[in-house]
Length: 139
View 1 (cartoon, rainbow, N blue to C red):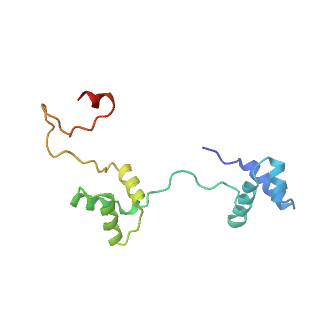
View 2: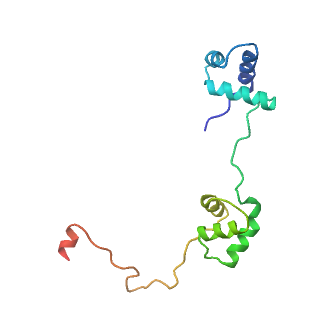
View 3: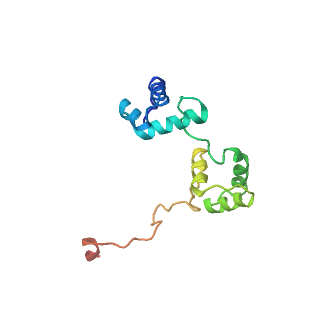
């Protein structure tokens, strides 16, 4: 992952642009992209700072509703993602299906279905699949 430019370079870029150079000229002078200079100047005008913005992972969309999700899953442990999304929508919490999935995976609340019966030691537990190719002609 790319790192932000140093504050020394950032301050030199800002000084050149504030001295009257265009963003294009400053980008060429410091061998950075034009969009980098434009965004840096927008940041300086908006915040007054040349420091880069925060980096890292954002909090999950359901981070504030962890207790509610846990309660819903405790009441109905076999809820699917779509059913859980409908429950949250009915309570006024609008999040996407993939956001729910990421939250559940991060909290180790997966939806793995368990088999209701023990596997057979002597017989097949799943139907025989269709065979193709040379095996099919021998059967």
